[in-house]
Length: 200
Image (cartoon, rainbow, N blue to C red; front, side):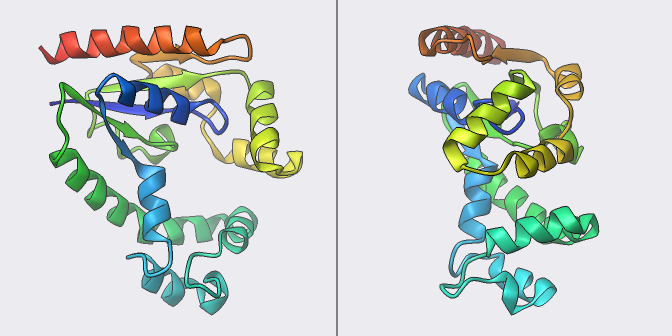
């Protein structure tokens, strides 16, 4: 089965593209959703996180304390590596399990940090980048999450640049501020047809 890696910076619209692909029958494996499940109460990563970062890293209901961990990894980049060493092997295993159950002519792995991780290039046949300019990213993230612009800038700084992502892209979805929902769906349909043809 053809394997597509779907990526893009925060606020680029990866989820909207993945949702649209799903309506055309694509099998979607979303690593963000997997990560949230692993770090929910009783999730498979919780014991490892608690052992590595202490009780303060876990909320009263037994989930990963995202605010605490977000602050920690931005202030101490080495701690990000420790967290990734716990999460990434578990995410990869679950992504593989879900992909084995996929049907249709291709499977889409939604991986926010696909370019940054360096591990996904060999796992997928094509990389599709959802692209938009930085100011659009910032506005979308502010609107949906209410994060301060300083924190959004920190998140963007920790991600690959727009140029780095585009340099890795086999396919690009333009989702800039000017793009309508209909225009986005039209692009996604074109990709769906192309990928089905490639899958043969």
